[in-house]
Length: 93
Image (tube, rainbow, N blue to C red; front, side, top):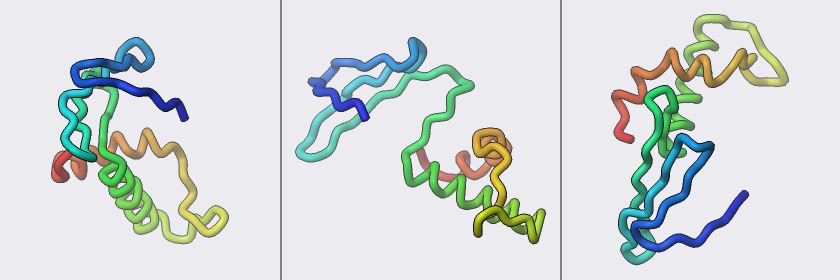
């Protein structure tokens, strides 16, 4: 994990296409602004975990009995995530 120190209005560029700006620092909270291409999904961790959990539950209902090491066999979490964007639209980001 890369750990950086930034001040208000300073930025971090990720992969040349994602820009993270420190918008505000209030006590122990930091507000971030994230600029990313439309095809790059950006979620808070708890939202991402909910999307993956719902996707796995959906797959389990659609394909009962397909088990890999005690878990539903993942094809490609990112591809399946793209098909569950409706959850993200119902969940605040």
